[in-house]
Length: 239
Image (cartoon, rainbow, N blue to C red; front, top):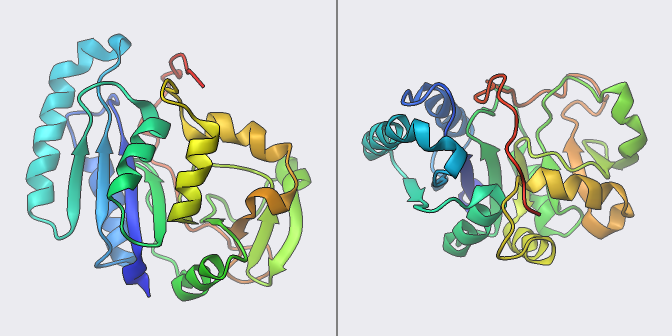
């Protein structure tokens, strides 16, 4: 059933470029779990604040294309004008033919720990949930407990917390969600808009879940963060 998943990776200029080591680690982590899933690497255009990094970014893209040619099923999707994450994702989803999509930022690899992909896919395709996050910590942080809404199943924890860490979603639902919340002029991370929208909604409106592999609320970590941005602050966002 994993053949029904396409993978989207968002990428943009970071201090370590032109090195491709960060995104290569992320792609390798996907291949550990989903050996044959099509991977779409979304490369954002430069924003005016990043022009000084232009040469490093062009070299990064050049190296990444070379790397992708040695892989199977890795498609590079370049954007020549600055789009930001939400807009890139909307446009790239037009190329996705599978019913499910796995989203990762370029510095959020999956861990080599068991994931019940068949169970997750079945729950989404049956409409029980629209979106399952592969959690970045071993348990829910105490400050986030108020956004949890109990269990959907023993291994799926309901939440009203949008987080852009790796997540598996219904592709058509994701298209509709983006269309309803972002317009042509939006230049923003998806999380920066959707976090507030989801937190103020009833669970049934978005049906978000977090994967709880053991069903205990412990040992949940299935993704990590290699911190590509480092200490850099976010630029201005346009919702």
